[in-house]
Length: 416
Image (cartoon, rainbow, N blue to C red; front, side):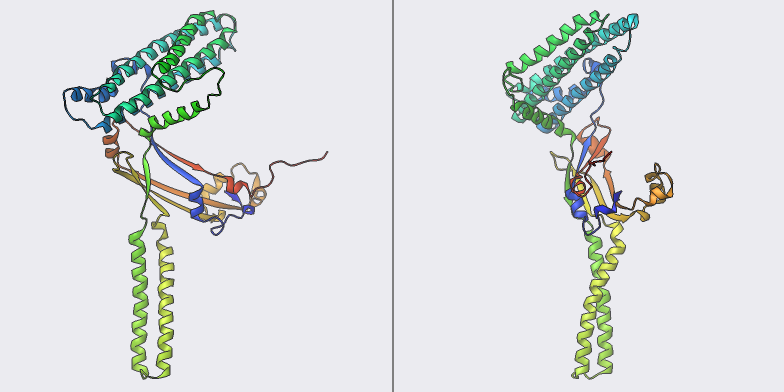
């Protein structure tokens, strides 16, 4: 809903401009696997998809590297997600510590220390299991693509371990400034050791993602985002533009052309019956009939096209597997600029639910951008690609800068 003073109309803001201002992504949700499951045999099926092909490779069998690469990246996403979830829960526990006093604070600190100890045990075990599986990628018989992806996964997971351990050390340091929290000091030292080990592990492996003292470290953000893109690419679907409404458009053109031709034939028959073919009247009326036939064709296409427009999306996008190119589904998008009075009553009521009375509502003349999107996906095709993924996130980013430029100054001066 936009104020009319912004001048947004179908002519000033066509659908093509809207699509220039939007970026869409389709992203599979990371499977939810707890860190303690990754540390135990409960998550064997996730590791099996990576380790099993290596047994066949060492037996001399030729193995397609694509599924192995997918599994490595997905395993790294699961590991990162599990760490994030554990840290979020611990951060919540730390946040309430300062509000407690006396014995309650001491009890909460003991509880946090116990949770941190379990996290440390599970973190070390899960990280070790991941490295044990991944190290098999470095065998000379393994495809070079798999070895390169493993290096990216190994470096990225080590960065995640260091980051989480370091942030937990920071939370522990803040808590240790409070009374009755000394029980956190031993586990704080262990977490600091894990962070340092991860740092030296990456340096020992020759990975460039480490901070140097007294250096600007300008390459580190780029390296981190590069690794994140490599690992997360397994979750993103490839969306490509496809032909939209070709059959309907051709049918509309054929019907309009048929109507125009029918008019021309009927007029020609009438002229031949009524006038001499070589007379000026016949020639003049034939020319007029030809002009009318051409206009009937164009008007027919416009009117019929408008009538069928609701069945023809502005854009039709194919959702494909980034690696194999297999079509997994399609996305149909349409956008229109409407007067606010043309919007459904239920939507209008929600729009003005916070406005007091009709006067305030009438004082808001608005134009509406209505965006409609329909996504159809093949669940069987998705399961063939990434078994275990059970959800999808549809992400739309809308750039408001064009509209903001037309708004009033956000700062006003009021004189007292």
